[in-house]
Amino acid sequence: MVLMHAADAITVQASDGSLVYANLAAARTLGFESPEALLETPIQQVMSRFELLDEDGRQLPVDQLPSRRALAGQSGPPSVVRFRDVASGDDRWSLVQAMPITDESGGVRLVINTFQDVSQLKRTEHQLRLLADAGAVLGRSVDYQQALQELADLLVGAIADWCVVDVLEPNQPVTRVAVAHADPAKRGLAEEIQRRYPTDPDAPGGVHDVIRTGSPMVMTEVSEETLRAAARDDEHFRLLKEAGIGSVVIVALRARNEVFGALTLVGSSGRHRFTDADLPLIEELARRAATAVDNARLLHEANEAIRMRDDFLAMASHDMRTPLAVILANLQLARRRLVGHDAEHPDAIQNLDAAERTTHKLTGLVGELMDISILRSGQSLPLSREAVDLAVVAEGTADEYRRLSAEYEIDTRLEEGVVGNWDATRIERVLRNLLDNALKYSPDGGSIEVVVRSEDGWAVAEVTDHGVGIPEDELPLLFEKFHRGSNTRDLRGTGLGLAGSRAVVQQLGGTIEVRSRLGEGSTFALRLPRDGPSGG
Image (tube, rainbow, N blue to C red; front, side):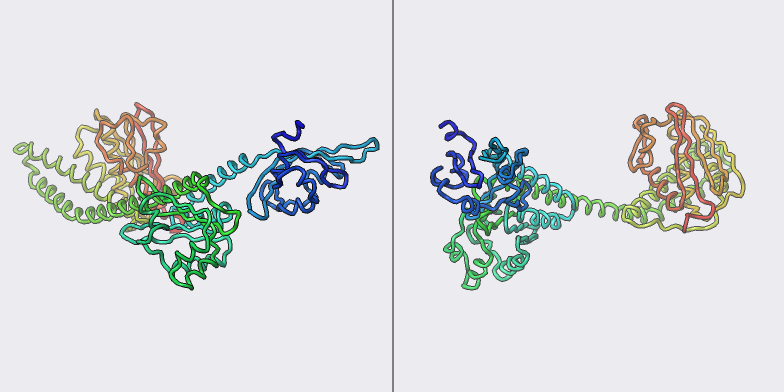
């Protein structure tokens, strides 16, 4: 009597496999009104009600059932068996254990089977796995239409027979961006229905209604009468019947409180019949899909804004170069005319020096902005290669800084004949950046050393200062755009110079590196191939 009312299903089989005992839970589990009705039914007929699957949904041979192994005298650990009701398509999972009872000679007299229902556990596990897989699919591509199609393909078979995703594009009507069907042949049918009978946006119910209201729609059973009422003519009705629409759920795609699409799932077989209990899972899938779409759109908008900014910077940089060159030429001309009159016009000389220095800096910044805009667009810098003597470029640059920065002592040690096929203008800009940094980060004046030498087929230029130095943990970030040292935030700068310099040097086939100790200064080393970049 106790076993009769136990929560777990219990059956007992004779040695020939026939059922000789079943409790109430076993009868209900196997779809019978009473244990007596179950016992009166041949075991083959009982089992024909179910499709037997293993834990992963693969077909399970009958001889692999725990009860069959026990009847053969084998015992083993419990197994998860998935019973799919042939009539309804519903799945039920049970943890099945079979224990053989033997006689004195070791023969099997009886087999006791226990079935512990783990359906809810397996459904939860299935949902969590589906959500994880959906997240992986949606995060794999920045093309949200491709991601939504992959999501539709994933959901078909897992929880639906047919999946459709519609998206409301800005300033456009609702667009169908993904269609998937368990039967590939019927995917074309779904597309044909949409092409020949596009959804009426003003009709009540359906995708447009869900997008307008944001409220889900669930139809557990779609009857023939419902299809007839929705059809626009006999051909439309025929196509809808052929599509096998048995159950439907439509949920909104919503992100940042804005509804911009809908996820539609259709069940054609009894196995996929939707109820309100399915909404939490489906709405969570729709929320993740909507977030992926929203993120992709935001990324596109950000990239477009960056492209427009870079285009503007490139045009502005180009347009500024000519007037800056004119300003610099006039400053230099004015200074030359004052040579010999220093004592009469000392302030004017200082003002012209300051203006010339500032104009040089602005010209360099404009060049850096132009180079970075070109590189961000995916293009290479347009280099003007010629034979360049690195020592000559370094000496000319150092002389200019000596004249314009009298409070610093700039020493040079330059090896003659260090020549390579480089872009003289851009090499000069790199050296200007390095000298600007050396002066800027030596705020109390001091000495700067510029060295040029050849080394194993490379041309090397080093600029050394004895200023504030760079924290060790920031050295790997130093050549990133807009990076500023944490110990130099009070000094003005854009954070573009070193990033642009590295880009130039790399395109010339070289490298630029830094050695530094905090509080002791820094050495920037520029290395260029004497014969141009490898393969160039």
